Every structure is written in C-alpha cells, then in structure tokens.
Image 1 (cartoon, rainbow, N blue to C red):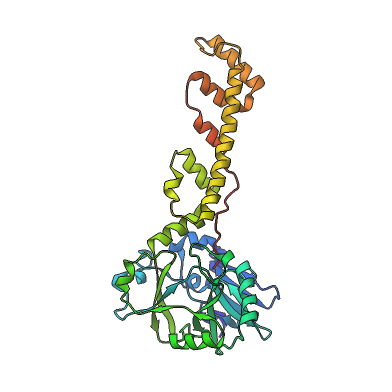
Image 2: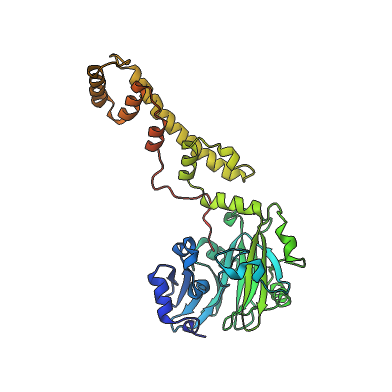
Length: 367
C-alpha cells in the first residue's frame, strides 16, 4: 500500500506547510516517519484526517507504507470531536483495555530486522530502549501485513504511574492496508509467541468505568471495531491521573514563579504528588526565594547606608536621594524609591527574578 492512498500529496503538503505534520528521516535514509507536531497538539480544532493518521506513519522511499500506528484518538466526551460524545457512541459494548502510562512503540522492519519507533522519532530514548529490548527478549514472530504496536514501559520513562516491570506490552496488531485490528485472542497468541505481556482487557459496562479513580493507574481505552477500517476509540482517564499528569508535564520554573509571585500555596497544588516531583518543585522554590531574599537584603542594606533624610518632605530631599541611588545603587533604584516612599516593592523583585528561557517541564512525554 502507498502512503498517498491514505490522503493526497497536496493534503500532506498543506499539513506540513502549516507545521501540523513533520517528516522525520530515518538515519539510514531509507524510511520517513510522519508525525503530528507540538503546533498540532495545541490546536486540536485544526486537525483533519491527515493529522489524525500521522501519528508515526512509517514510509519507504518509494512511498510504500511500512508501518501503520493507531490513528489519533481523544478523550471521552470531548466536545471538539462529536464522535467521542457518549450520545454518539455505538450501542454495542466496546473492547475495553487498560490505558498504560508509557510511550507508544511502533514496530517496523528494516533490512530484515525488527525495530521500534515512537510516535515522533526513530531514535528517541524510548525508541532505542524498545528496539534493544525487542532484540534481546523477543523472537519477533509477527503476522505479515500487520504493524505490532506496544506500550514502552521502563523506569526512566515513567510519567505518573509506577510499574513493577520493564518491557514492551502488546497493544494491537494493525492491518497496514485497512487499519483494521486483530482480535484480542490473536493478541494473546502473538504476545505469548513473542515472550511479552498483552494489554489487560476488561468485561464491564462503560458507565461503570466513569465512576472509578484507581490509584497509580491511568484509566481505560474503549474501542469499537469496524470491519475493513480503523476502530473508533476513546480514552477514559482517571481524575487523579489527569491532575498529576498535567502537573508533571506542564509545570515549569515559570509556573512556580507565578505561584510565588501571586502568593499561592504551592503545597495545596502539589499534594499527593511523587516524591521526586515534590523535590524538584522544592528546589525551584528555594532557588527563587533565595534570589528574592538576596535582592531584598541588598536593598535594605543600601537603604540603611543612606546618611541623608529618609523622611522626605520636599523636592530637594527627593532629588538628593535620587542622585545618591543612581550614583551608588542604580540596579536597585526602583526598590529603593519604593522604600523611601513607603510603598510595596515585592512585584519589582519578582519581576527581576522571573525565569527566562527555562521552559523545561519535570516530565517530557514522548509518544
């Protein structure tokens, strides 16, 4: 099957031009991976069928489709995507499986050997770990014409959920031409043949899942198979997981700075978080408070060293103080002028120590 049987060349080019999709070359030069971008992640209202399918599509240089991952799927009852609304879901019970908290692994063959890519890269840390694990643990007996998809789980790749194992968990076998997926019984068979776990399946009403909030778990994936094409899928995430995931993957030094500047209680926001995240937050808080104190202390020492009149009552005294500040303590001028006027200066100090260029989050999610 050719890539351009999924969408036209013009449609793909338009998505690349709009920076919604990017093309990632394989180090060998023999393959290309197409994936949606961060721009797309922040503008879900602009998605179309091209963006949906570009979740790690792997293509040979002649345009042949080598590996086909899941299409993008959304949370249950996402108003931006009508197909996810409860009222619009099929009346039949879904295939309900565990939503695992790792990275999507997309298996592909190159020169007769199996490798694993992630949604956006051939050689990410997760992809390299998964490829090594697959080579060391699995004989790689996979049905022809299908793409094996895995959850990549290992300690360094943990986001929120803490697992007691490391390895690949078989999630699906996707037919490359149609997008249709193998039955769960086939997954069990091929997981056993390839010495790996298979994703856990559940038999319970969808409505019952909505009331759950299980500690140290992400939630469920509900899928409705559709003959000859891709299943309809939705994610059901636990409330506690969603809160922690947002904190761990969206919190930056700037976030902490904003909370301190606004006088918010950080401990209320980060309660029940992993210890390492709490330590990370504490380190940023201590650094920022230390920088604040250093500036404030310097201003107080400078103010105390002024030998003139600090109870200013006329323009001459004000001018004398201003000339002294600009001559000896210009970097602290705004704070010193506020001190002598009896005004608040905390906003000035917070502005001075605002983190610049530090947008690194505690966790960077791949896949």
